[in-house]
Image (cartoon, rainbow, N blue to C red; front, side, top):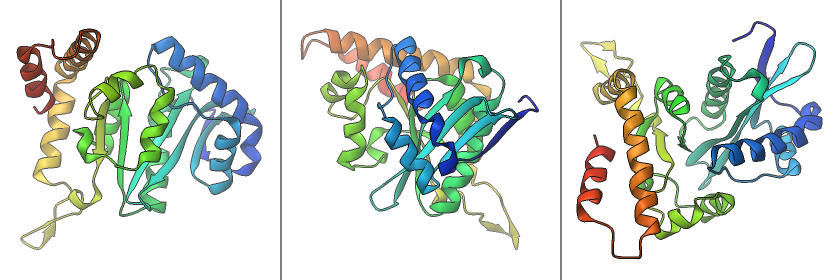
Length: 246
């Protein structure tokens, strides 16, 4: 990351950046052909007021990036949402730093919450994996209707609903603090569970395979959605199921 970029918790003084942030969110979603829930400048400002956001700026005050926290089911689940980086600063490493900072903020404010995310980006999946997230099925995410209403503005919402909210083009990832607590072996703390260590190693060593899986998943879902109901093949479903639970 460039040395002149500052990544910190957002404050009410950052409200003037809200409109720029929401405009870039919309443009980024349009360019990718996938959606993130549309947010108004007022909503972004409310996150700044609540101390539930992270912002990145240059030393001279140029906006660089942003991400915010949403809590569901009375703080049982937390999502780090709306990660966005200005096009001029992409591939600079700032996204990773923003994700790390907002993850730390989430852990501080909601220490017992499960932190989850939905994404189509392989780079974000890698960052999440490094933070301790693991790929999960949608059934392990929050059931809060307000969260799922946020998907209505996504271009793939019809696919999500056609799958009864059990699957979509996004990959679900989850950090469960209950599985990260250090166990004791011979009186010494072990910093990672075997299961968590295994998933991080698999993700790190098989990014190319994972990328192929993501594209295959998107292909199968889009193909199935375009067909008439009941015409999708069992073969495609079984292969997708195998890849999804590797």
